[in-house]
Length: 366
Ligand code: ZN
Ligand code: ZN
Image: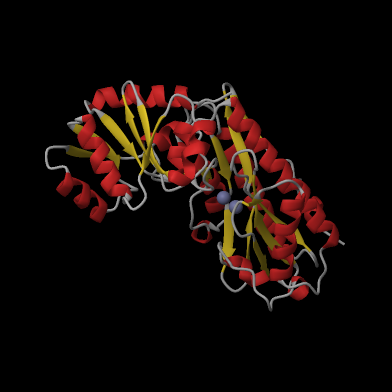
């Protein structure tokens, strides 16, 4: 079922409050979310009673197939997108047009304002992103599929992990397994970081560091589904050598921080309070200075989207939101431990969608 007409209706209701005639949507992901159109280089002009997709000749047939109740405006060969937008907005006689202030550049805003001096352009922030934060059943099902692909790919990687492999070898294998397990692609370039390199939360896999160079390796990966590019995002630390007392303390602290945070997730709770639950466990254990990022992020068509679980976030959780919960402790020169799972906010609490075991015993290989 095509949900995009319902999404547009919700958005139009929020536009009425702003007293604007239309919302100009140029973010490729937002255009897709609101129309079902899977191509690029297109912009949506959403009005109260009409939606108009400005695109080019390559996409005429595709728009007819993919979009319901959307009028196409195919710009002629040689006409730039902003010329087409100015022409259409002028012809429609729109007076007040909202635009996505986090997407439209200052230069583009200036360009449109110069061409359409009688139109007032109003910046609005995160309007579509707020809608996207709450997933419907179909979106949750696609995220579940993306998680299943990621989990099967990880099982394949773990089964074949060799101490002589470099981080890059393992990351390349993982990307291949993700595709073999049905993913369109990895949802982001996987992170494979051995020992001290795991102290960099966003380490790039190295062609020199080998899996066997230290006692543990951090792997952060996910799949992007095929039917629609919904994402999954997980992190596990795999123990390939011995478990030192320091590792055990840090691992157990991160795990209990994650468990405390997950236990706090339910509708109505502030995102910042979920972050605080995890942070307090890590602080009480004396590692507060080594947890320097937010607890998690929304997950959907983008790998990082609303809502953010962090100190400054005043968002309250709603049923249908899908978030990662990923506390970590990173000790420079020693290494890092992060455990990341994907969690759905349900009407009466939450459901952990990911299933890769995370107890200390279960993350040892060999
Ligand atoms: Zn991740
Ligand atoms: Zn993440």
